[in-house]
Structures are given as structure tokens and as C-alpha cells.
Amino acid sequence: MEKITKRILSGVQPSGDLHLGNYLGAIKNFVSLQKEFECFFCVVDLHAITVWQDPKILKQKTREVAAAFIASGIDPDKNTLFVQSQVPQHAQLAWIFNCVARMGWLNRMTQFKDKAGKNSENVSVGLFSYPTLMAADILIYLATHVPVGEDQKQHLELTRDIAQKFNNDFNTDIFPIPEPLILGEATRVMSLRDGLKKMSKSDPSDYSRIMLSDSEEEIIKKIKKAKTDPMPLPDNLEDAKNRPEAINLLTIYAALNDQEIGTVISEYGGKEFSQFKNDLGELASSKLSPISVEMNKLLQDEKYLDSVIIKGKERAINIADPVLNKIYQIIGLFRG
Image (cartoon, rainbow, N blue to C red; front, side, top):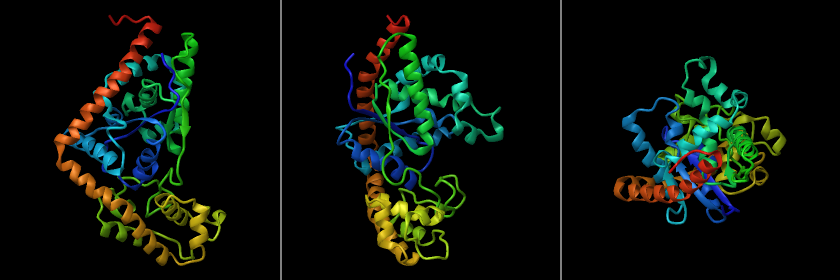
């Protein structure tokens, strides 16, 4: 098969409303990557159902993620934008990878331990084997690079291990060993109410997060109410790292404005948070509110949105199916 030199696969779960962390940690980076890579962006609904999802809501949330991709600047004509469950080759390859991966590898996954907690005996098998499906998502397209946040780096390492083991077991070089792309200043956006907790839609406080659906006024209000310490802004990075709320807001500003965090610190170091919050609120609302407006327009036009998803499904299957055929041949499975 032809060797791919620069191909990306990444996805976002439709498990709730999208917030600033989803945007800065993933979607914003997707927009810049489409200039350089052949890109496959998927709504990973099979991953979402590893925990309970309301069937009446899941389909709508799937459309919302697709709308967010497009509203943020991803070109559906240039890239393959699709829904994971519509491309059955993902699940088919995931089963093969379940037979390649070792239990010890999955037992080391810290994200499973964090999500399952003390309830690990009662969570779904899917939550445990999630990383083998993620590996299938990536490798069914022979992706060479994967944009990942800090919390997904271990899963990508497992993907690399699976690719290497499959290649070795079957004396083939079909799978590239995908490289991580950790991009931007805000790979991990923290809560506006607690700089030690990741921004999350499950936080009971609406003021802990900025949603992509928030209005300009809501964004500015949430930034103004963001928790800070009583001192002026830090004037060096070392000091900032020891002040969780300060480093979080500085990081958000840097990511939204495409600056390095050191540049933001040099501009605002020693100033009061009130002035900085005014500027950050204006910046955030100017960047995010147009996305909210465009998302709402797209969601009103389900016919167009669904046509994009269907076209993406066809493109994805056209790439994935020959790869799966080759894998079946390598393993010795009969496909007819």
C-alpha cells in the first residue's frame, strides 16, 4: 500500500456541550493543521457510549460537534469530517486490536483508573478497552500524526505499541508508528473556579467554564467572576506556575491570542487582575462569540449538516475499507 507522509486523525466526543477547553485543546488546533496535513476529523460517538448517554440527546450532540468543527473554521470540502459509528471499519479493527493488545498494557492506563475510581468492577468493559478503539480510529487511516492533549499521551503510546506489535507479529510494515502533536499553549484548560481542576461540563458551577454557545455578555461575565488570588499578576513564568488561577488565565489569553505565555506575562506582569480580566473578556468574546453564532446557524440547517456528515462517511469508508481488507489478508481472515 502507498505510504502516507502527513495524515492526521483526531476526534471529539459528543457527550455534552462544548466548552473553551474543547476548543483550545483540540478544535482550534485542527483549524491550523488542515493547512499542512491530510486531515480526518471525527465525532467519536462510540467512545461517548462507554458511559451512559441519553439516546434522545446523543444524535443532537453529534450534530453540535460537527457544527462546531465547521463554525471554528474546518473546511468540510478539504477535510474528511465524519461520525465514527457510521464507519464500521473502526469497530472491526478495534476487535483485532483487542486480540493484539495485552491486558497488562490496558491495566496501566491511568485515565481508566481516574474515571472508574473505586467503582472499577461496575464500569463498562468499553471504558476499559477504550484505548484499543482509539488505536483503531487512528490506524485504520494509517495516520502518521495525532494531535493529543496531556491526558491522551498515554493512549497514543499504547497505539504505537499496538502498531509495532502487529507489524512484528505478522512481519509487515502496514502500520506507521504515529507521532504525537502537542500544540498551542492551552493543552489543558483548567476550571475558572479552581485552577487545580480541569475545565469540565460536569462541574456544578456554570461559572467554572466558558461554553462555545455562550453569548458575548456571558463570556465577559464569567471571566470577570473567575477566581484569582489577591496579588498582582506574576511577572515571571516560575512564579506564575505556583499560582494555579493566574497561570490558567494567562494560558487562556496566550492560546486565544496565538502568543507565547512569556509574552503575555511580560505585558501584564505586576498589573492588577481587574485590568487583565477586562482585556481577556474582550479577547475571549471576540474569538468565541462568532463561533457560537455560526454554530447556531448550522444547527438550524440540519439538511446541510447531515449532507456534510454523509459525504464524510463515504470518504472515510473509501480510505478505511481497503486498509481493513489488507489487514484481513495479513491475518488470514476470510472476507470474500
